[in-house]
Image (cartoon, rainbow, N blue to C red; front, side, top):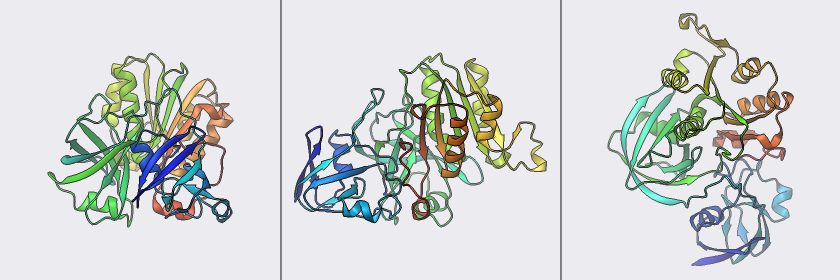
Length: 353
């Protein structure tokens, strides 16, 4: 059985199979709805149901409040139609967004690398090339793990025959625990993608600031590689934060890029360096490193933030105090199910894309 969903104000009609979410069906048919986390915790994909019946699914109560549910608001990433529907969505697709269609792929694990004590680098060879935009992510289906898990793509789009992923071990996280403790070379997995609307606005000529924490380096690494490979002339700044030197992964590679490209500037920061690290760089949090580098004068830049919610929130405050406008701040929060159970996602100040 399937249901027809009409999307207003565009008039697009999406065919949704029984048990399929609104978002999955729309993206696979080339109809783009706003979304970010894809698993019901951030609230970006809210749509209004105008006609028909729908199961709200596993939406977090923090992302979708009781009052909203009563008013017919649902999260497209969780909502399951129970009849034909008419929905209203806030569709505002950026002209820089490529909008590649989401497809399913078979992938083989061809490389497992220890990037840091808590982060592994995984390379998945795909059964055919995947078109994606730097900054996007894929969903993995893992053995004995219910549902899919989202991971940002770390390689450049020019390398479309595989995807590199940076996977941080989340305490008691079933997906990341399987990857860190059970995954073997040669394992075959189902992958779908590309997802997400976190990407560089290439038509904007402002210089670019990237702020990354932990495994949040993955998306910025893809975006920076793409910019440099395509000859972008803007000044590009990467501020990478970690607790100590062992956690500051990819440093040698990034130092080499800064040597090769005069318009790329790499500034790492450690907030708890060990005595044995003999650290001579910036000591403090990564947003503090950015503020220190620009002496608080950050206006006139585009900013891209990727990492855990506390880092994102601190960076936003710093950027706003430095007179960076909301329209010039773009982010990707790394939200887990635990974050969704504790974080309040009701603020509408910023689009989480």
